[in-house]
Image 1 (cartoon, one colour):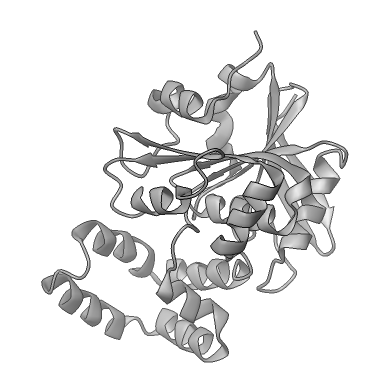
Image 2 (tube, one colour; image 1 turned 60 degrees about the horizontal axis):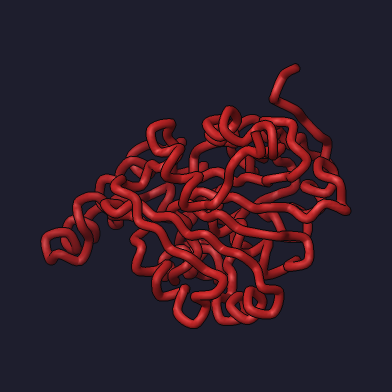
Length: 272
C-alpha cells in the first residue's frame, strides 16, 4: 500500500505520508523546504509500535494550499483530526521549522498531545527578523519588497559578516534561499503563511508543568544555525519534564546514520 495520501481541506489539497502501522500515533512536521518524506527513516525501527503521519505543510511537498497566505494552529489541528482519530493522544515530532510548529500546537491544544520530540528545533529563541517580517504590517511589506529587490540585504550581510556579527554558516544559509527569485518568492509565502506559529515560551513552560508533558530536545553539537543553548535555557526549571541531548552532528540530523542516537535520545522504541 502506498504511504502517500491526500485529503481535501476547504479549497486545498493536503498531502501526507503514512509510515508504520502501530497503535500509537506520531504526527511529524518537517523543516523548511522539505516534506514529510524525511521521516521515512523511522519506519523500520518504529513501524510496529507506531503509525507516523507526516504532513506536508503549505507551500511544501505535494500540498496545494489555496487558503491564502495564512495557516492558523486550529486549522492545522482540524487537518490532523481528519487523519488521526480524535480520541487518540498524539506524540508530536518536529524537525527544525517543524519544531516551532509542534511547540505552538502544544501551547494551543495541550490536551491533544502526550509527548514532544523536537530535533534541531526552531521556536526556542526569538528570531527578530522573522518576527518583524511576519508579525507587523510594515515589516511584512518591507519583507515583500526585499524578496523582489534583495540587493541591500546582501550588502548588509557582507558588512555584518566582516564585523563578525554573522558566522559564515549563517551567511551561506541565507544565500542558499535568497540568491534566486523563485526561492525568494516561496520564502515569502512560507514565512508569511506560518506567522501564527510563534509559541509564547513562558506560557508554554506553565503548560508543560501543569500537564506533566515529556519534552525531548535533540540538537547537533556542531549546528551553527540552531544551537543547543536555546534548549538548555528553555529546560531551566523544567528538569523533571524536559531533557536536552547534544549529538555529534550538525543541523541535518534526519539521516539513517543518526537513527540509533535519535531514538535513544527520544526514548522511543518498537515493542518487538
